[in-house]
Image (cartoon, rainbow, N blue to C red; front, side, top):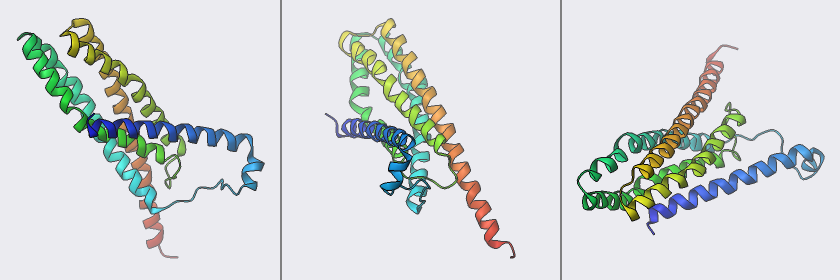
Length: 209
């Protein structure tokens, strides 16, 4: 197994576990507010410089994921159909070359999912928690649709080009690309909210008392 593919699997799995734990924690806090107070669980968030660094990393990786998703949809996957016109050997060679290298470019997507899941636990100043939850939900949607695209690829790799499997690959990767696009827009919205706070904070510090 490629180490890059292993990183992708582990980071996506870790992000799902962190997200489930955050859901359980949120439900427990809402159902047992008195018990949470006794255990010393703070209801008001504690901000840190680390959260800003995590947000910057998450936004950068989100933009990368948007580009990677649409590069596959508009460039890489259409070549499957192009190569099939040159015969089974040419198609198989391209399919083998693509699948043997694709993990080296997709592991940042897993790190993106993990970083947003961590931000459920590390609040960012002026970024609403519901915005982070929305992005995490989209990351879960990405994890849910990806196996369908992978199955179509595997079928074509084993059995040769198929219009039916190619259509499935394009449909599911198109859905994945749209999900990445929403993640990208929401991540930029989160960064905008954070920078707006930074600007207003600087203005307050410079204004005369």
